[in-house]
Image 1 (tube, helix red, strand yellow):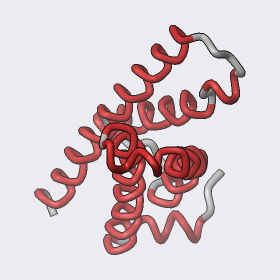
Image 2 (cartoon, helix red, strand yellow):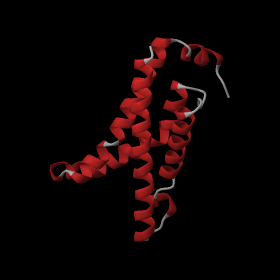
Image 3 (cartoon, one colour):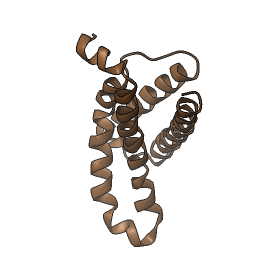
Image 4 (cartoon, one colour):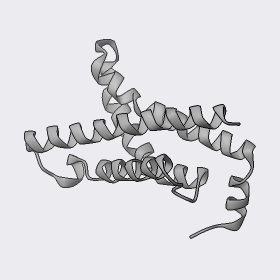
Length: 134
């Protein structure tokens, strides 16, 4: 589904940059959960951060759609597929699956974090290319 008014907005350089900034900040914010789990002083905030992480992750496709209605080509297509695959994996966390398997949790976590790292790296590459070639 395409909204003409949004598609026309997405063609404007200023809109692309601001919506891209919002999406990049969203992705950066998602890493806060890792820091609250790893840094001892921040552990008291881990449960609150986890709840925010899940809700923000759940709406991430909407943020992506506001930034771009298309998946792009080349590395942008790869970024889109990995982003949406990781979001889908996030939807099926252990709260949803209702399984207490340690192996399943560790496997899920490794895949989710690995894809998150890849998304972040490609996002930084994309931002670099956007500003380098403009």
